[in-house]
Length: 168
Ligand code: S3P
Image (tube, rainbow, N blue to C red; front, side):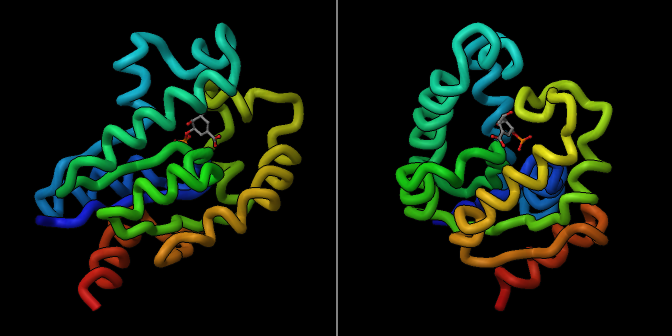
């Protein structure tokens, strides 16, 4: 059995790009939770939020976490809100190492600006929203087994750092 590698952290911290790169390097399956939800629901996350609300999205997300956590040998990119639910963390931990991809509010703003697929950041002052949400969420992300500061690293560098950490 090969354990899962689970990437958590804020929107724009590079979870999906790094997970894809890591999966290639380690010959593991790449799973993007948001993509899996969109495929299952046959609609983009913005539409799930606008038609049925965030609560509904969180229920679907929780089911998807449970489903994916039951398998192994995967690199899993989680949506930014996954870590806020203790049951999600417990499920992902069962056979996974949790890695927090940390990024500064400035790096997050630069990476997310101009992109419209994240309903929580489609607001008048995204910089302010990022700061508020990040402050509230930091303690949840810090439950990870390891933290990698990604603000000044490329996708390749973050992937290599994770490989180094997991080899220790
Ligand atoms: C969310 C992050 C998004 C997506 C949804 C909600 C959040 O995923 O799950 O828009 O609550 O932080 P990314 O972190 O991949 O952008």
